[in-house]
Length: 218
Ligand code: E4P
Image: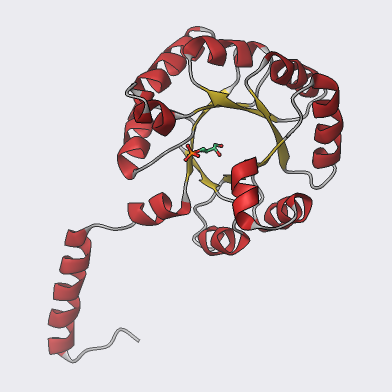
C-alpha cells in the first residue's frame, strides 16, 4: 500500500518525507487556503520534496477552464497529478487529460457508480472520501470494498483506489486489509501510526536493563 500525505504544509511534508515512507502528496483548495501561501509556489515546492505524484486540484467548474488550469499546473513539475472533482465537466477533463498521458486524481467520490465512471474516464486515482461518509452515518469503508470489488471484476480498468478523508489508523488498516492501492493521510494520522504504548513501555524496560550491563555497542 502506498502512503500519501494529505496536506499543503511544506514543513510537515519535509519532516514526513525524511522517514522514507512517503509515496506522494494530495492537496485540495481548503488545504491550500489553510497554508496561507500562493498555490503555484506551494505545489512547486512540494514537487521538489517528493518524487511521487503530487495532486494539485483545478478550481474551475467548466471543462474548458479546467483544461487551461490543468495545462498550467502540469507545467509546474513532472510529478504533478491533476485533481478534478467528480462532476460531468470533471470527468470530461479527466478523459481528455488521461488520453494525453497526464495523470488524473478524481476527487469527491461518494458512490461506487461515480467510481466506475471515473475509471472509464481513465482516472489514475479515484479518491473516495471515507471520513465524510462516516460523518453522515454511512459506512465509508463499505464504499471502498464495493469499488475494489468492481475494479477487480474488470482488470482492464487501471484506476488505483486512493482512500481519502481518513480520520484515524483504523481506516488505514481496514483499507489495507481490503487491498486498497493508496491511503492519503493527514500528517497527524501518519504520525499516530508509529506509536503504541507497549512499544514505549517495552523500550524503556529494555534501555533500563541495558544500562545495568554497563556495556556499549560502539
Ligand atoms: C483528498 O485528497 C482530500 O484532500 C482529503 O482526503 C479530504 O479529507 P477531509 O474530509 O478530512 O477534508
